[in-house]
Image 1: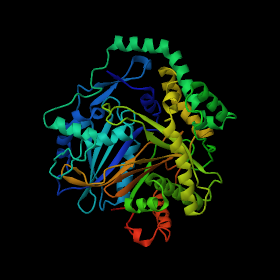
Image 2: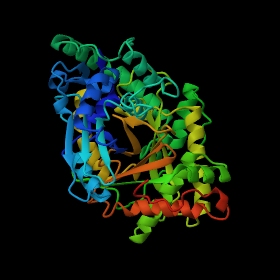
Image 3: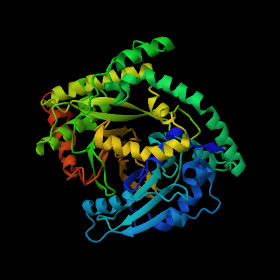
Length: 509
């Protein structure tokens, strides 16, 4: 029996007519002369479905929404509810693919079935196909999503899984596929009606105690919580709470988290636009090495510079830095439960107000360094604690209104930026080589109408940008600004000998 946590359930609660809370990926593949087809995908999915709990479990709702739902096996599982196929009209350019995927990405998943879909998209030029897969955020986070994807991919074109260089979950998948399955987590039946109502009654009765505990823990991070950090005395209150709790009172102080107004922020519509493209990972690593920074610092700088240029073009660049949320995985290594979320977030300013690109890079490094040091000392739990403060029935009813109000009046952040590390070797799906993998994430009223996610794979950084067209009038231009931002950093300070693939087109590998 596996019940959704308060954080898991929040991803269900946030869904409205304008918000779909799934994460997705768009894989571009060599079709292997037609080997990547619907029949082959169906066979692969059915063969390996038992290795991915997130793909085989459906929601079991508690009557009247009195408690968080449970995960339960789907006795009537039908691959036809999850696997779809379409063909783009000729010539099948990237912008046509983006439009088709944007329409699919905007649609919410059917909660009567396990919360995922896969779409095979034909009609791309040069013998390529695309596979778009989306899974509800209530079921996976970035790390468990990558692990789930790994169970469907192979290291060789002949579909041969090997144990070498595979993540932990993929090794378990290989073991199970060869006749020695390991127990799955979260696959037991949900409790019956009486059990659900009894559990709901117990949790309702004990909720005040848990709510107080959540409030106390959240207050310790008051200076890191969006909006709350701006309350007068927030830093002193947080420090005092940590002194009382004897929990590292001297954490590094965070800079101001005051959120400027941008076109990104405000209520979103149900429509989505998206764009995708890649930059060479070697170039990014060279910039990082030359400046004594991490790859993630350079990625954040590229996004900062691209956003600055985009806003400046429209004469809406704020004088204050943008405030960004960066999701952080807190899932422990080797964790067996791959259903649900184990994530937190770092909130940090992006120095979009710094005009010089190298000064901007140094400012990002300093800001992210401080945020990382604080997180390393005491990983923030405020995201989970905030979700746990109200009883489940109240949360499910209040969340959409709270998100809408915050988006209109008090946006806590300007946008979310995620960077997910991936394998630096080629992977295969049904015999077809995965050429690129563009991650696509969630938009909400509260987090704004723009989301940037990147995934490092096989020597490239693959960017997926999702936007609400009512908030972001043109989404492909951001990709050009990302490339320009990297070129700015690949100057004489880095050295021409470090440049690799500067002429690579962002639209293709």
